[in-house]
Image 1 (tube, protein in one colour):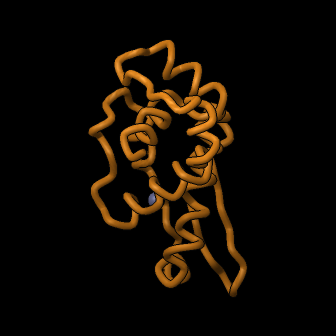
Image 2: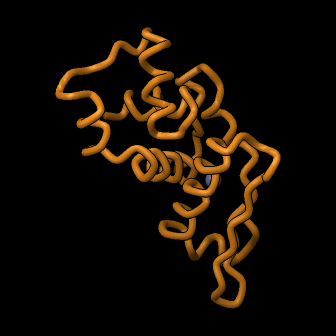
Length: 122
Ligand SMILES: [Zn+2]
């Protein structure tokens, strides 16, 4: 969740989730603070749909503009383009190559689904 109360920003993530998922959720909520402050100042913004990014289906992304923006922000924050380029050593990666995706995901401490999402928006 993300909220701004009396000018104080608040982010909450589920401590029971996998640490990689918590990192993505925190980055997603930070995006709402950076991009959507007027909205989250009016009411607590509770995200239940971020988990769609953690399914194996890359196409199962958020459909609301705010959520799409927050996912893109989080993805780029956690997997910076210059570091990803360095990791790929000038080459590419086969999105069907599960082992390669998982190795990259471990390196950036994100889920394989989050890595796949980033690679498709490269
Ligand atoms: Zn959100």
